[in-house]
Length: 253
Image: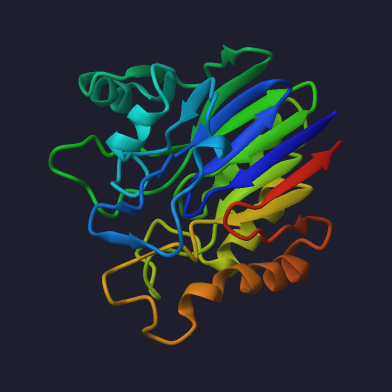
């Protein structure tokens, strides 16, 4: 039994677990609002056939409406506040309550806390969270945008089993991070707190402001390797898998 995770850039991951395909924070278009994507947009074959969407929050680089529509009428699993907004866009918003697990095929999904309230939006709710996914093949934590918080130490207890694989943000769309984000060092600490066995860095190396991809030089390529070094120091029992955009990892329990 294996878990397969494919990184499509920024925070978009495709999770294939026990015959179920979940797509987290889909950004499937060439750009995200004013932000530019480095490289080509994801191929349809990499995300097609999703059974549900994991939506962490409603910032434009995570909740891009045209990308959500590309996935069709599948449940968008998010907070109740966010689900109402999603439904208002003609999509299938499915709000989850605190500690509620929802079944999708042969796996279960619940929300977990996140701390990400530094950029409220006037026309979208500001609820933020991550997701836990559990099935016969294991447990996956998709952190969403967040800062460090104590509940990271409770993820295994929430899941009823150790975390096998974590998808953790390690950067942003600029060289500086605002509050409510994890940099490479903080992400390594988060992995140590969660007890994850494997970790894939996301939310880096993809989006940038117009003209900002090379200033300062090399910033877009730094966060992933930095995270790998930090994880070896902070959580040596957790293995980092630094993927290229479009790359995949398979993890066996």
